[in-house]
Amino acid sequence: MPRNAAALLGSGALPLVTNIHRRKRPSFWTVRNLFYQTHLWLGLILGLYLMMMGFTGSLLVFGREIDRWLNPHLWNVEVKGQRLPLSQILSSFEQRYPDWKGRYTYINFPVEANHPYTIRLGPNRASQVDVFLDPYTGAILGDRTRTSSFYGFLCYLHFYLFLGQAGWLLNGWGAVLALPMLFSGIWLWWPAMRAGRAVWKARFSVRTDAGVSRALYDVHNAAGVYPFLFSLLVAVTAMEFAFPEPVASLVYGLTGTAAATRLTVPKPGRQRLPVDVLVAAADQALVGRIRRVSFPRTPEVPLMVRKEWGDWNRTRNHANIAVDPFSGRVLSIEDTRDAPLARKLIQWCIPIHFGIWGGLTTRIVYVFLGLAWVAAFVTGFWHWILRRVRRNRPSSRCPSAA
Image (cartoon, rainbow, N blue to C red; front, side):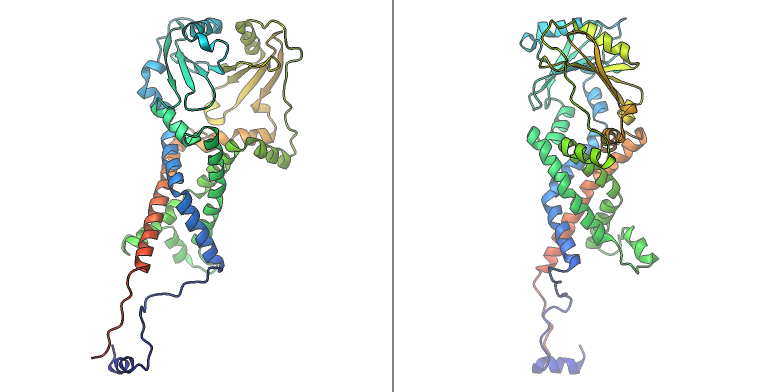
């Protein structure tokens, strides 16, 4: 310190500076600080939740493959000629589970020749049961609840938070709150209008030579900015899953599409036809493979047969064929390939959310994009802790002149 300055400090002519590096805190009501506080507190509130969703979502990208690898006794059957009629499969099931006779929700048909039938039982909660049956012998291969397998555990945690339908709705509100967090983060990251090329380049890079705090800051920015479009699409599609009716009303209204009407059986109450006759009527109505048969729980509801094609894994194209269970007449065919724009937009929520729209490549990319949420929370929280420690560190006084 210069001698004259030290003399002035010692005499009290100049005020004592307690921390020459501390900046004056900005007013809370500045635009930037409002965005910063929004991003900070939503990140702290939602951080662990979003980290869990990103990690479990990354695992679920290949969840079905992992499940088949872990449980070959349930998913791989020996091909033995022709499959049994559906009525025999159901009869075999009802002999083993007599209390569930006529109360099953739906049965999934095998996609491949060596895959089983699966019957789902019970309401949508952790105790819901899937039963696996050999399509060639009708033998029961096994059963399991929603949470008794690794894949089921991940699904119930990711989609329902172990809270049933309440967790499904909470995920929707989590997606709603994630939107202001995402946009406030982008606003804070965006360079000034007059920023030059060097500033833009720095925004997309990670410095490792400027200390831990700067590296965490850069990694946090990268983990938030690079997957921004992905995060936005995942949040919007999650809102559609949680709030299907309001979102459908909005989409149908914006596109000028007339809403679909609820289909009912014209004259219920007679003797129902055998299930094989009903499924055969649906199968003859449209070319494609049968994927699911949903059974009516009340007389006025038709039996629904879902048919799919080879592009189902990428597009979710399918047809729902409604059959009168009393007459066997096909009441309607809803083919998503010919659906109006609103229906197609809603249908594409699943391929976009799960990354199946582009095949194996996009699924691999989605794994890393989901893990970016983990990196964003860890680096953001760590950087925030370092800032608080630095801010609360005891201030050092300038030495007085001897």
